[in-house]
Image 1 (cartoon, rainbow, N blue to C red):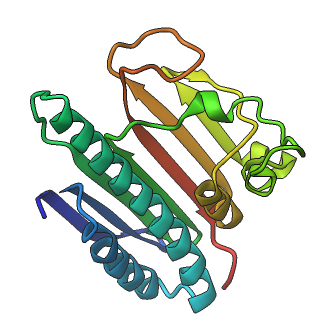
Image 2 (cartoon, rainbow, N blue to C red):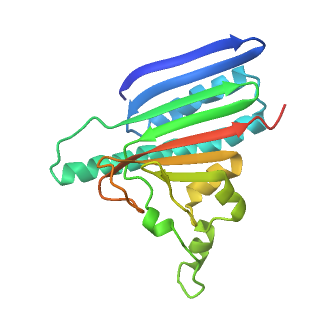
Image 3 (cartoon, rainbow, N blue to C red):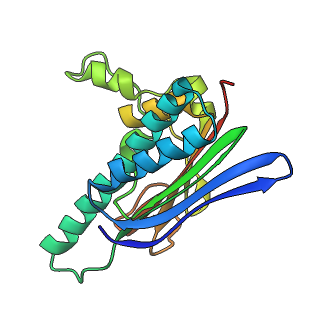
Amino acid sequence: MYSSHIMVDTRKKGKKTEINFLDSYTADTSVVPSVINILVENLSAMNYPRAEIDEIILSMDEAITNAVQETIRKKRAMANCGCIDERREITIRYSITDYDFNATIIDHGCGLDIESLVGIVPNVESTDYHDQIIRYATESEQKKITVRLNGKVVPLKGIGAGLKIILAFMDSVTIDLIDKKKILSDSVSEHTDGTILNLKRKRRYF
């Protein structure tokens, strides 16, 4: 595993204590338990109760796993087409205070398949109707999530099961899609190259 840098520091701002973490990795499944173990230690050091830790860990595990898988998938696609191999990293940052948790995960995968999610309406005649129901976003979920492509908000109707898990435990989720070509588009293009995922949550248990 490649790690370009790591920062874990504890700061006191008046009576407020804060732990910050920042590190970058190559896309590898070993990234997930490595970061999760550090996160558990940091949350425990901030005296977060077990229930709170479990909920944050579930969200972060899902988010990091997805980032790793998408980046690995992109690397394989590049190798298969004979493209020049770039160093493709996963960058993870989070901050923990007595009152909130804030995390950002940057990957270089293919991004969300917006075309398959915008305007989804479950079709009762479909063979995968149950899966469509799971993917369909409720009003409360839609209020929690913001998706932007090249800075422009994309209306999102459906979401994957992984995002549903994250939304269940986070107060807000923002997804910024990176497009290398910076084209103006209403959907992800073949040039889209990664995702910036931000998760925010106020402390719920004291």
